[in-house]
Length: 292
Image (cartoon, rainbow, N blue to C red):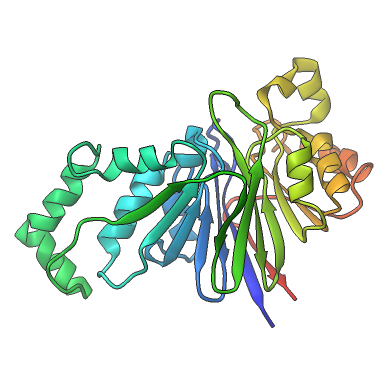
């Protein structure tokens, strides 16, 4: 039986709380581990979930707000530093700015963290640690394949593939994408941050799981005109899931107010009036299995 494990590393927003901060997820497939977004402390949360940076083979960004990408330098450097030279080269995909961001982190002449890897490649002590870890000299600089992508089929693995379509969040200042991953265990959609829109509804049609941004109680958002922020609240998330016919709705990117117990219970009641599938409020470091 094919199985895919879904790990929620970050289930929060740009507002840090003791329970939630930023966005990041991992799909553990039979042969590969795939990360979606790399928000605050994603590398630390990855390890706390029983995973490890060197095992991540692919990373997809939905957009480049800091709560979705600020741990990218840490993840890149940690994955490289802990490697022994036999790991698969990391492949990174995302909307406009993905290539530029990678260049600004690692480039030998212009990268903000080039001083780090240059020192580790050349210092005798760092070389020795690399060898003791199992690496064979010479120690090579970081090598990452990064690619700016557009809507369509964006990747095909051995037994999984990824499709992307436009999400509506912070345009025209930032481009945003939602992703649908087809695996032998079923289909899962990562909406990223988005308002309810036709492109994401179509992408998510009949998916087994949809992880959707859900900022706050919809009534409160409507009073504050939070809809201008380009993100779903409770009932918008429910309507998106119902319109798409998804089987399981996972609510993430949950704001501090909605995360309160009473607000969450009201949110579930409101959602259940619209959406008739299974509903999960994501908690950081939780995981669940997709299986056929």
